[in-house]
Length: 88
Image (tube, rainbow, N blue to C red; front, top):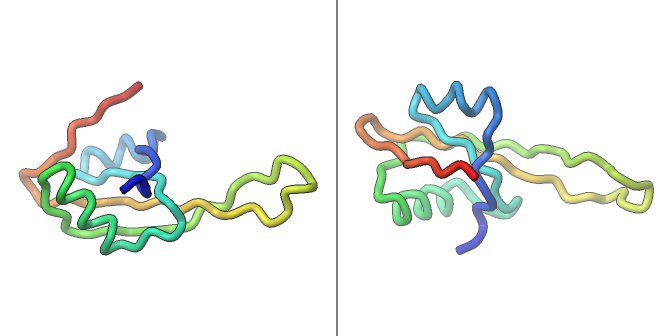
């Protein structure tokens, strides 16, 4: 499954890491249930809660009027679970 695109690293997402919450850019058609199953299978953790929101992309040209929005999900893990981060 290639629907989770990448981990989002911002000042807010770094603060959320202290609360055991991880932020990901995902495919706009991905549901919370699919994301929960993917995270639990890949990282062998238990998800407590997921918040999702759509993020509008910037319009770069006038031709790109109907740009698809992106989606970001904030995943909160149960205590004593964590996801190792790999920063490139």
